[in-house]
Length: 75
Length: 254
Image 1 (cartoon, rainbow over the protein chains, first blue to last red):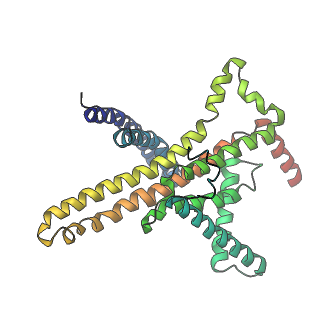
Image 2 (tube, each protein chain N blue to C red; image 1 turned 90 degrees about the vertical axis):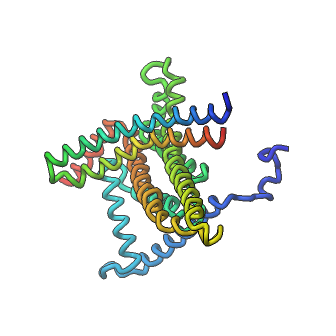
Image 3 (tube, chains in turn purple, orange; image 1 turned 90 degrees about the horizontal axis):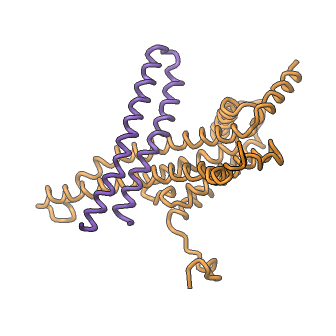
């Protein structure tokens, strides 16, 4: 197989993890909005913890993007 | 000869642009802190603070409240280090807007920020548990020693890579989109020539990208870093000491 094609396939497999992390992020936001709808006076606190949680979950997707960029341009 | 084993390495000190920008940010913040210190010494405590001093007092008050809220008793003076870390991190993330190189794109900058947290975690652990500090490596049984030695480095690695990954991914995506928009514009407006045709799309789209990847991402990452630092350090304090401190403060209050 061509080296370039192998790198592209590897990068595409690495970026699959970003899809999984976005599923988790969607669940997180859905639950947070459910909590906000049930308890509107907690809106501010829930929003700030939601953003922090989303950033933590997003880290996994960012690792995947970093790895695929490294595979494509550095390896 | 290898670059790193050269004894004359300090004579040929040749830092990259990111390191220079980071040092410049540190210099500006230190000068600001000295100015605020002089203002605070000269200020009349009976009058309302004005201007820079007012902002500084507000920030100190908020961060001290944050430290006592998230970390509990025993960390009342922890707001000081947050006051140093937050402006440095936020400026390092967002300075790419001005066209200067972003310091976070150099692995040394996030690594040193995470090292501060790492050292503080272990310092707090030693401070509260004294010689029992070494017990954490053989917890729960001595068989876990290699695993504990590995997991000791996990906070350092994850914090470094989180900051570095966010910054470098934002930078790469902005560069990719800018390059593609430039060539698209050059193809559409090719009748103007190769130079003048390529400048039409990029200034419209770039502000949105910078607002998300630099401002929003930088703000959220700064917040996450501060929260994680506070929580990691606060969990090093054993429970019984917490109860003791609360009891003492209650006795004093009575």
